Length: 262
Image 1 (cartoon, rainbow, N blue to C red):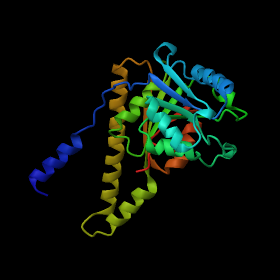
Image 2: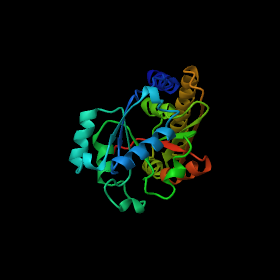
Image 3: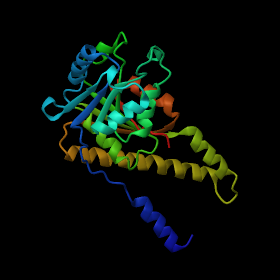
Image 4: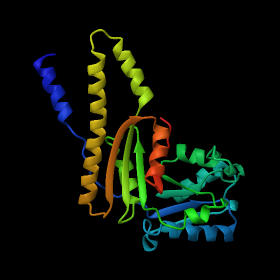
């Protein structure tokens, strides 16, 4: 490696992604239900109370869709386009009984998360026996998750906006173990590269980037005087299993993540 290449590598290694907090607009909220008018009105009050610390009553314009306001997915997308909300709130399996089984989002929510650019907040289905209990207390612990946390400024901004004053925000990065091992296996087949050195260097770099960004976000949110505690974590593991375990261990109330498929 030439001196110039070495200098470039050192320079890139020293560079860190910064974080500047800019609170996203959440002033217009569209609540999508499949309930009749009276039921939807009661559900709206429950949701507003649950999110009262995050979406202040005087600063939030609420719009509610009832079961007669749309039929098809196309109808719903047209309503979203018509109202142009900053936030969509709904639940799984609209206009379906499939909510009784925890295996799908339902076609309406599935399309909403993939087609619209509006963030979607998914709440427990109102017909669940424990729905009222789950929405009785406002969320205090919020977790933002990403397999590439470094540079995820928008994700952190939304997660911070849903963390009330006095609450706790967890920034979690899990490097997928199977993907990492596949790349390391390929590297190990190259005689020019020491596989042990490569493994240590790559792993250290990946986790350091995530930890550095978490620290930058913590500093930025502290400077924004939001009054929340921010904690970062980065590790190698199995994302779904490790996220589920972390949610349970830390008693997370709200999960913030990307929904669009790459």
